[in-house]
Length: 487
Ligand SMILES: *[C@@H]1O[C@H](CO)[C@@H](O)[C@H](O)[C@H]1NC(C)=O
Ligand SMILES: *[C@@H]1O[C@H](CO)[C@@H](O)[C@H](O)[C@H]1NC(C)=O
Ligand SMILES: *[C@@H]1O[C@H](CO)[C@@H](O)[C@H](O)[C@H]1NC(C)=O
Ligand SMILES: *[C@@H]1O[C@H](CO)[C@@H](O)[C@H](O)[C@H]1NC(C)=O
Ligand SMILES: *[C@@H]1O[C@H](CO)[C@@H](O)[C@H](O)[C@H]1NC(C)=O
Ligand SMILES: *[C@@H]1O[C@H](CO)[C@@H](O)[C@H](O)[C@H]1NC(C)=O
Image (cartoon, rainbow, N blue to C red; front, top):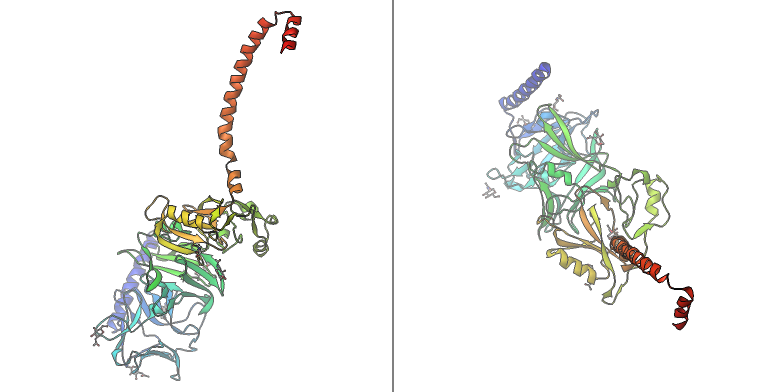
């Protein structure tokens, strides 16, 4: 116990000392026009959280220019300049050239990477800001002419953005490394879906592999566990005519944090734990088989508790066209589709359809859904009811509590639906007959007590009748016979 505390203290001292040494050696956070940064030199942000310099990842001997968290030298790289143009030796040099571009030169002074931007005469300094953002600016204002936050690698830091600038068309996304030793762009990307409601999507090539579920005003609907740390790292999604973006901030005093899309396609949030002097993973997605995109196919409903059925299921009113084997390969079941039991009845403005509630779900992919934040859920229902192409609807914003407000309407297949803790309700259009079937249960609830009362009354009547009959029974049979014949 004592030994570890001592070690920790030593590490902290070493860390503080190293920052001090950088400062003493005249290494600051700026590279001015005409100056150069060679392998072994670093820039350190004010306060010391971030370091920019040359490094070799993992077992690789190649050299890259990057920015990392100073506390975990080499293991938490958050930005890399020359991702797929590695330097083979330590002769690299970073320069802010006369044209106002940041350029990385190799040993024979060829450009291997540049900031693809020329700030001209106004670009006088490159500075590593407290946030970990490397900016080129004019020396008197931090306002950037170019910034590394506009060119994310695999890591989202506080104050960065994912999404789309609707004016310039610029898009911010994360791209995984190829492997733990190779920062070249890998197979996975993480983007913000900007059609429908904002939602984070992990892609492998052009195939979606994981969604967080749509933004519900507070968090992404399929990841309610972020509520546990949303106080430390407030999340925000912005939808305006200028941008659709997502980002987060760090509250004052919150531990260092980073969100990474890993080379295996996992989205992870890490937090620096100063007491154990290590990074702790506080979120990872996909979490379970049901997070696999579209696992149960259109109109499927994945149940993370239903391991015995391979987690496969369909929403109410649908069933598998051929029942899936107990644990079929995912591809196989993607071919077996959920089929609707009874056709919808909606045409020419009249319908007999109704809605079933699918409770507690991560809402389906909203890519092709239509969204209106300005209506109530009742108006949403009325709109969906009146429009024969509307197959389901749900609230778009849960901030007001209750059933929520706003309106998302799905007109094509319901894709990637799963059960999730603290999930939302999806209102699914079904044929009247399906909904009538559904009402058998309440009907029985009413019928059973009613039948019991009738039976009791009958018994009472029978007893009464029997008593009366015994008296009548005293009458000679022939008399009764005559009575009968008279009738
Ligand atoms: C890099 O900068 C140092 C001092 O700032 C200077 O002596 C050296 O000549 C520069 N190297 C190149 C290749 O410009
Ligand atoms: C920290 O980074 C520097 C510069 O890349 C490197 O020389 C040093 O070996 C690293 N230290 C550790 C402990 O990884
Ligand atoms: C630097 O840019 C800011 C705004 O971006 C401007 O107000 C300021 O005058 C500029 N300073 C110089 C020296 O160009
Ligand atoms: C990537 O994710 C896998 C699976 O969770 C994990 O084992 C691995 O440590 C992660 N790799 C990195 C570089 O974080
Ligand atoms: C949205 O529509 C496009 C084009 O028709 C289609 O390729 C895509 O699969 C649809 N997305 C969803 C989630 O249904
Ligand atoms: C029904 O909804 C679709 C999709 O939102 C829309 O394109 C269409 O105009 C709507 N039809 C009517 C009659 O409102």
